[in-house]
Image 1: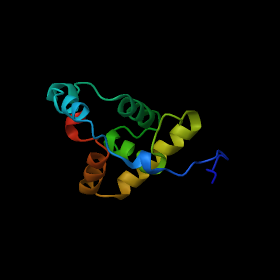
Image 2 (image 1 turned 45 degrees about the vertical axis):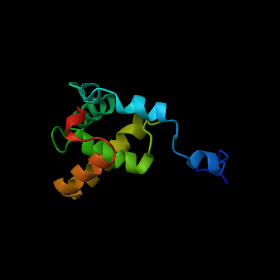
Image 3 (image 1 turned 45 degrees about the horizontal axis):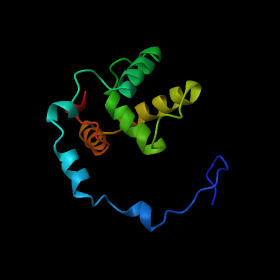
Image 4 (image 1 turned 90 degrees about the vertical axis):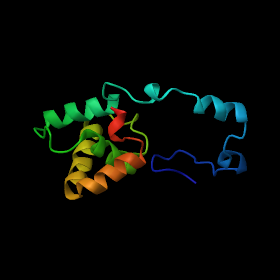
Length: 119
């Protein structure tokens, strides 16, 4: 099977679907202080989306984390987006966010871990 860029995709095997069962790993993750899970400053993508919206003349049109959530729905990871592709993705996601309700956008953002307390 190949993706849209022609790279070969390997189907997942049984090992990729297993959750970690090592109790030490789960215990160490559970012991992370809540203060480390929330940040005072916005995340990198949130800042970049805000800057892109400003260049488009759309400052404050929607919450940047809503836009990020819509982008993640289309692209999953955002690391590979750059230049014109990034701008197009922000523009399309912004239009989706504006066409939806605030309640739906908030739920979508929370489903991607982009809740209000995130940054």
